[in-house]
Image 1 (tube, rainbow, N blue to C red):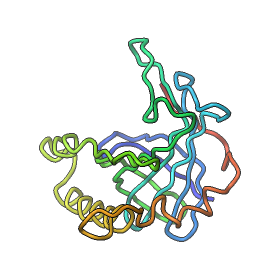
Image 2 (image 1 turned 180 degrees about the horizontal axis):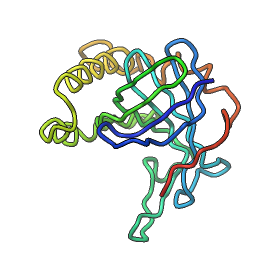
Image 3 (image 1 turned 90 degrees about the horizontal axis):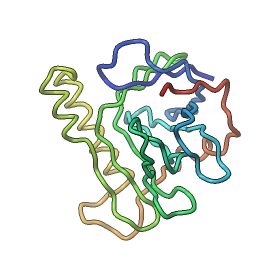
Image 4 (image 1 turned 90 degrees about the vertical axis):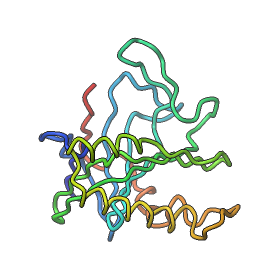
Length: 194
């Protein structure tokens, strides 16, 4: 069992945590609860399990929610509207600080939504990544390292060859299989604010 803290790069401390996590080799799983403004998929709880490929600094989850109430009071649908269960993985580039007993995971803005039902991928928030560099929130060395790791993730797990293929290379990664099978919750549930 490890303690995990999460937040965005540049967020002030304290981050959300400690969250319960389990590490198997270079893969981490951790969980947190979502606030009541989220609506879970039928038969599921608002407990979000996230997996981190520690060597690449990439996290991913299959969102546990299908709708949420916005601050303005509107209902926003999740990333699989019209489906009866989630099929789209949400993948984030992250910066990881790991001292074996405590792991800090900070979002580095760039995301890709990866549907496993035949729809195309959708890259997001490259503008936020650029803004974080421009305003000094993210140092250039962190940004350059992040882009190199992101390309390594894309090449290894989504499209190994230069030309697109019909089949997945290794997604969702086989490395997370053992951690997906663990019963929930992994430990005491910490609910995100808001």
